[in-house]
Image 1 (spheres, rainbow, N blue to C red):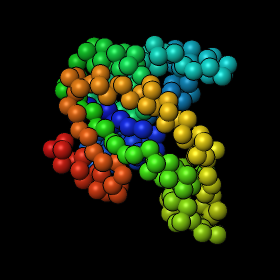
Image 2 (cartoon, rainbow, N blue to C red):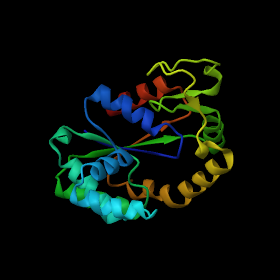
Image 3 (tube, one colour):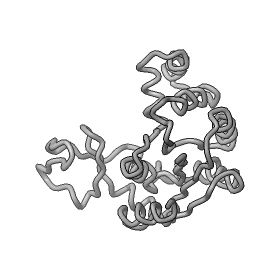
Length: 213
């Protein structure tokens, strides 16, 4: 089962991708993770990407597309995958469609998580992230001398700089201008599943699984 998980920043794509990957027994492909892995493993594309990243520049679509192609061709993806964080532009979507053709994927799904911008802003401005394991909690759940329920670190939760309201509003503006059009690109190229991303996490997962099965 080949899945693209899609939606605005903070709508819960990464959370759902991890849960679905475990339930469906297919890998969660985070573009940030595979880029760091390619750089760490010093693959040919990884070395090119490192030169660009070290200059503080964005990795070109063609290089990122090549890294994704290598990943999706890996044996671990033979039974499917969940792609998280890509594509973010129509150009990237076109690159990905060409990759799908070369690796002969089956019909793929695009899961779109929807939520109002104000809900996203409220969610992100009130979240804290463990600086040890990356677990995310609402600030109402974290008290003084709080131990992380995942890694047991104490007082490890903090607000990320990009979770400030002005930053979030800029990210959402970029999403609506640049990334949202990708959804229209896929209307006749994938099985579309639209889910209310403002629902509780377990309910979102339940709705996705019902629609996939």
